[in-house]
Length: 279
Image (cartoon, rainbow, N blue to C red; front, side):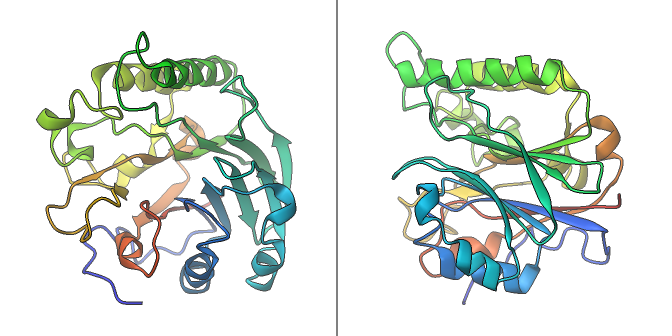
């Protein structure tokens, strides 16, 4: 699989963590199972959290994951849209499926790593439509309300938790290709950034990506399909995140992104992130 040079990969290449957790908005797991299998073979995270699986549970490729060495699965599926799945080489126990959208959409699944003091929450935050005004765009209001329900949940959280997924918000200026040009574009508006900051403050979440790739370094995880060559102009955004409870964050020892995955055959518009922990 040919790919361009990746300036963000192998951020901490010489660390061998105890457990690794990856997240990837795959944009249809059945369509992209070949590149998922390739990723699992080459990078072998212990746990992989997928978003936008776009399938009902009965059609999920359980057998393909089992053949790849990932027999443990927790998922929340939906026909044709949304959906999240957490697959693991290690035993996991489903702990929750929360409806932060308040309409039954499949956007969250939580698991506990059996025998380990870690809970992993896999979330797909709504994109929010095109207009950053809830008065004329209900989808934008739904996104803000989703984050509000997440914040209420986080405020009462009392266990070592890693929350990962596609947050659909790039909060920092260095998380986007042009802060000035995207200030009025959904995913980087001040209102979304402020709303996400309230969620972060509710539990004291540590943004693991930025612990290892410090601001103001460039850090992107998504490039639009509209560009035939995603490297031309490098118009990326950091929409995908891995955040940890304060105590758990102290156990994070590595973090990397695989930008070359954006150049694979029939790629997702997102790339995988992976964090290593010594538990």
